[in-house]
Length: 332
Image (cartoon, rainbow, N blue to C red; front, side, top):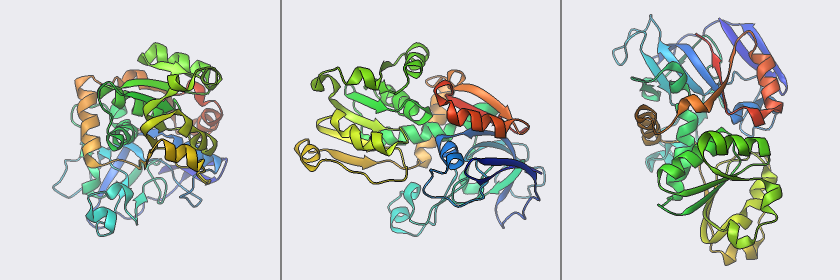
């Protein structure tokens, strides 16, 4: 089968591989679509902290149950969404109902090989029926669920000011779901072109860092600030945008140390939160939001590739992400 392998940072190769034996109880799947995530760009660039090479990327996935599936949980040919987080079920986090941050978590495409291949397999409990969604829409559920989870973690309230730093797919997802909760959302991004797109296509208030330096501090005071930049420098500087009594939610995960000035952090009585992955409820909420039209997936999906051009395209998009919102690899 065709498999796209990241051999080392900066090196993607399309290779012919054998389909491994399906673990007992798992479901064999024919990959339909794979969304290309910021995590994948970090893997390609060598900036992902939880990874060993070589790696088959791909965790934003829609797939069809293979014809040789013999179980009863699904029907062959049925379209499903992958919940890519494999949790142990026994650690402290799992016992608390938080498998998204399991102590022993294994994420498809990060800790183990993912779905940038013609076939893969997954446990039935990690598959969600995609009734009423297209293959493209189903492949976008996971990244949207991450944004929704961050908004739930923060507890965004109606009318509260929220600032999302970083206007990539995850930041945009945070903004969309904060707005659905009734929040007043502004997105800050380093690219003026990206700001224009987010304003024109999605109707967000936007601001660039150059503009931000000229505004008064009180104009940037936000009850909720989400970092989705993938930049440790930005993460360390985002505290200044948080209002006194506000919350700072770190959705990004990159290599490096978080460093805040203690007086600035303390005087705000800042709530500092990390938000990792998503829960089953988040996936279900996103599916319902797409079906209802509350989330416009047509506007989110901007680029497409195939196995024949994916290595070249992913390399190019990694260096020119201002123009890309969500790129999708079409497998079948």
